[in-house]
Amino acid sequence: MKRSPALAQLSREHHTALSLALRIENAASDRALAEIAATLPSLFRGELEPHFQEEERSLLPRLAAAGENEAVARTLREHAELRDLVKAVQQGSASALAEFGVLLRAHVRFEERELFPLAERVLPGLANDVPPTTL
Image 1 (tube, helix red, strand yellow):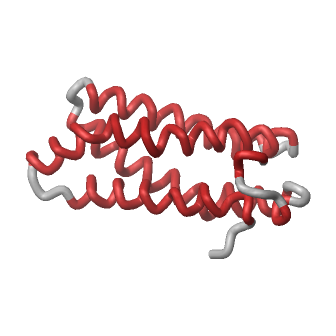
Image 2 (image 1 turned 45 degrees about the vertical axis):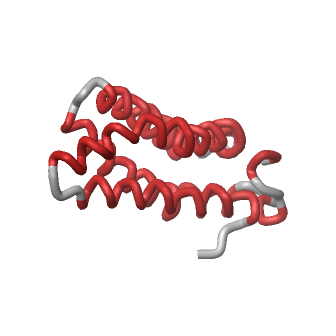
């Protein structure tokens, strides 16, 4: 799906998140799950957390100003839940890893199917905006 220039990079970054969710879902052994769990905190800090922060800094305030509080609240709630699940994985919770994968996939689908199309509809001039650092 073609995205406005302001959302294109955020949309591309969702591929990494979906790949991670799929790896978690398809892990065929406890060893594979342990390897994913061991690398999750670093991957989260390096890729997912910066993505969340960019949305929270640039996109969500504009959506809130446009009155889209429900979508903003859901996004923030899911970001917080994903952060909490990463902490639980770090503390050794095997079930948290599976929950993380399920929520991550659902969150990306929400953003791609609902949040980003909403932003493109309600934020004037978004199609002409430059990438997110200046949203």
